[in-house]
Length: 69
Image: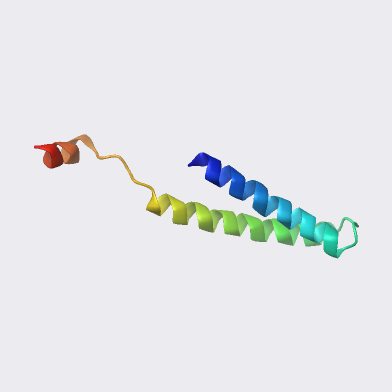
């Protein structure tokens, strides 16, 4: 599921930088870009931990023996 995280990161950071440039008429204002990147990073962390909790974890050997015996 690494592709999902990479796609989300590219999308979040692309929109963060693009929207800062759009609203400032193409002028680079580092404060606006920094705030947007901080928000994108927070969103990426939120998605990472949400997706990580839903992923299946492999059985440890002792639990696998209990299930299949």
